[in-house]
Image 1 (cartoon, rainbow, N blue to C red):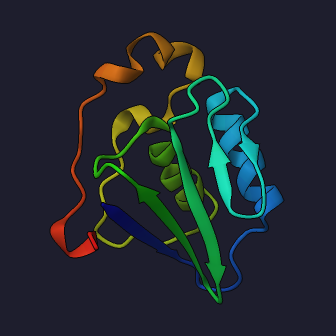
Image 2 (cartoon, rainbow, N blue to C red):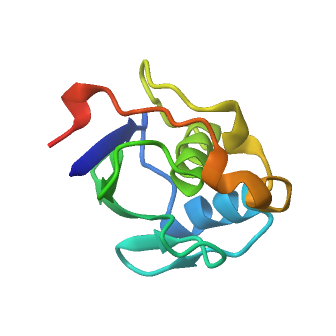
Image 3 (cartoon, rainbow, N blue to C red):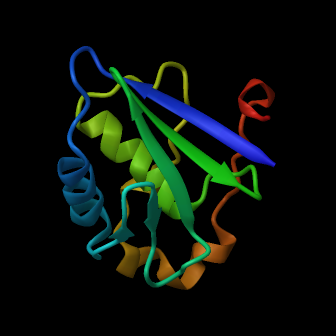
Length: 119
């Protein structure tokens, strides 16, 4: 299963460096990233693909359809950086540090993607 989420910006989206810095600030850890993927180094299955297209940052997840910790943090980070998530839902735990959530990351409430975002 593939799930997409687009975050739109009024102007130019933040650079990947700004995006990663915001994620690192929120989580308190340094995520691993390359030109396409962002990974939680303490929980490698928690990852997603990101792409930039004009005024939009797209986040794509393969294999599951709930919002993981890192994906929730990324959505929260992009909104903090001025992005528009529309009517999207960001879980309250998305603003928590990894240290505060690591022992219960497998038990976070699951929030399924809306069906119109699934491919």
